[in-house]
Image 1 (cartoon, rainbow, N blue to C red):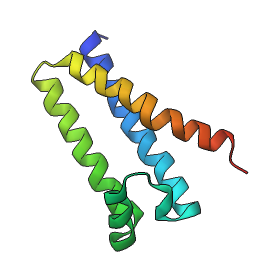
Image 2 (image 1 turned 60 degrees about the vertical axis):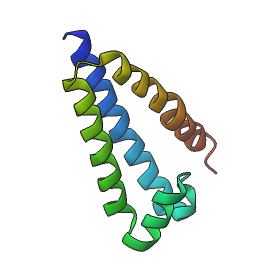
Image 3 (image 1 turned 90 degrees about the horizontal axis):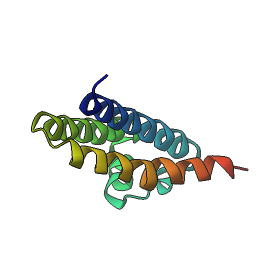
Length: 98
């Protein structure tokens, strides 16, 4: 697999895991578990499922656009950001879950 496709695949996997981890936490703890105030508010209005599908669809569309534009470095940076800023904190939450 070439590096650009690998970066895209990692980005897509990070989006999927972030959505899954967020859904599990929100189902257990309510919309307050979502750190993004806008998404938390939308979850209260629309429900967590539709909100996360819309948010992750937008993120995936943006990632695909960046990939198609050939900005693999930007996509790689976004992937690292998601791993450090979203997946990492969720892993900590689940590791310390009561």
